[in-house]
Amino acid sequence: YHKLGELGPSLTASQKVIELDPRNAAAQANIGGVLLAIGRLEEAEKHFNEALRIDSKYTEAYKNIGKLYLYKNDLKMSELSFLSAISLDSNCAESRANLANIYYKKGRLEEALIECQKAILIRPGYAEAYNIQGNIHNFKGEIDSAESCYREAINLKENFSDAYNNLGSVLRARGEAYEAIAAYKKALLSNPHSSDAHNNLANVYMDIGNFHDAEKCYVEAINNNPYFLEA
Image (cartoon, rainbow, N blue to C red):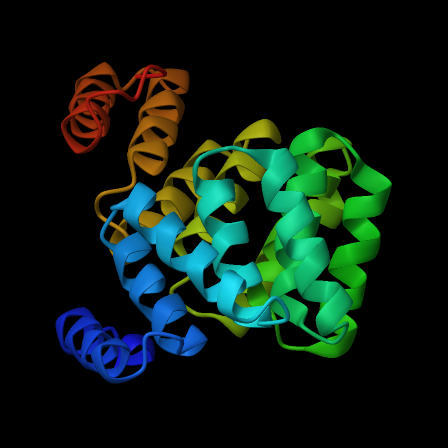
């Protein structure tokens, strides 16, 4: 249920399992995953920790709580969680890609690239890993390599909003305003509520003097996230 996005039935099914077997680690972790998906972070954390108390070697719980800490921007705890997951399953591409993202956020770029490369070696068609790799190259000023990674991510995952948004930023940095606009619009087709993409589109409209459309995009960015300070 959970993998199909049917969160309500997934939560109900797992709760019934726990009623019959309170020490079912998988059910505890699944409830945590549903709660994480709907933003109930503190409750989700309790269920992930309960899953790990029941089974200290339950890889999925480490992965999920790692995502939770990443969402909360607790990079230290997120890193420890994904390292624990990798120690139990060294061939988990998802854990390695998430660890790469943490290293990128910490500025540990070479380590981040190594983890991306490991993730791609494990799962050659892993679009998310290429997107993170693009972010690393972009941060290092390696624009051509960044663009190549973003385009590969899009090739692997056609409606990849984050990759289109990142590609737009590379194109804007090159001065290719209209190509950047096209990329940001594709990002918004996949995720109309992306404040980041709305804000980036507004910025490039400002670059070309289209203040009317820029204002509309800034308003959309704020409407989608009132706490989005950049707009």
